[in-house]
Length: 415
Image 1 (cartoon, one colour):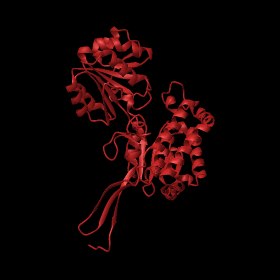
Image 2 (spheres, one colour):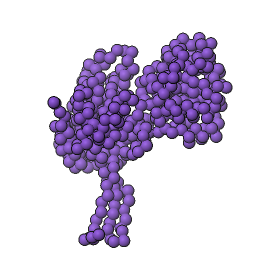
Image 3 (cartoon, one colour):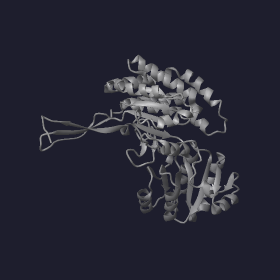
Image 4 (cartoon, helix red, strand yellow):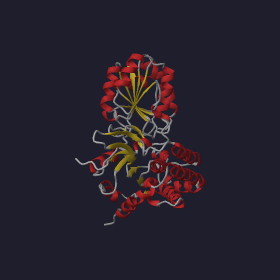
């Protein structure tokens, strides 16, 4: 049977190459990567088109996959942002001298070899490569078949820069997209230090159940926005529309809208025409369905139980009326994926109750969930949004691509 073991051996050998690179050397390397991406944008777009033509225009993944001139320039800029971030490695976390004279120090060091499994997002290829290099890690990239040609050209450009800088090109590798290698990747604990899945619930669940390598989950986003009865209706409607339609195929987009029953009629009268402009399909509970039907909302479906807790990744959302903050909090607790949740309210007491009670990586007051993003939060870029609680939570970026090492210096002490 074919194997990826040589890729894994190459990655292990490449650790010495990236470990020898100074802070300035890492900055120089990432800056050169940015220039290579910009100067080869025509070639990237040509290869990207080979992937795009395989997907129908109606597939929401097509927007995630698309790389045009503007997006490529934005990716190059994000590389410069990463280069400008402080090196997270070799930071002294603590140091002290014990009673026996031993000098004990704790510092940050690279994780080692980081494997990332993801779908239809070629920007992840660039972001992960830059973040791993900046933090002194080797990365193994396993993108999906949908983005094969795009990922191939991007990785080849990065490897060209690595070679030109006198480094081992295997600091960044693209693993085969064929599914027959997935289990080998997940169980390569001899070589890979951590696996990070980024994509659908199906992908994340498969990785969680089958991995022998430690996993940091970047979970799917089932994002709620609760419109409390004191919310300013027009401002709330603008936030909801942004959260749903600005880029519906991403994980921080709105999935379920919860509306206080006492303002539902007035709020939906403001919101419905705005969503209708974008042809948003609404899956409404019985009460919301009646109100929206009275407003002649055209793209309306009666919600089923499966429409709550569902990540739509499209111009679709579910709507439910609630009797107040307690009911909203209970619904979110039951259906949230612990990604991003928002409350729109003018009541400070209720706002603080919501922000403290909701168990999610990011919680918002009077703002769109679309802001959950490593670059927006000033982290340069992100590997994903972690919805778990150990090691990393929320935008998972540079400062979490390190672990700790204890260094102990003695003068002949024995125990």
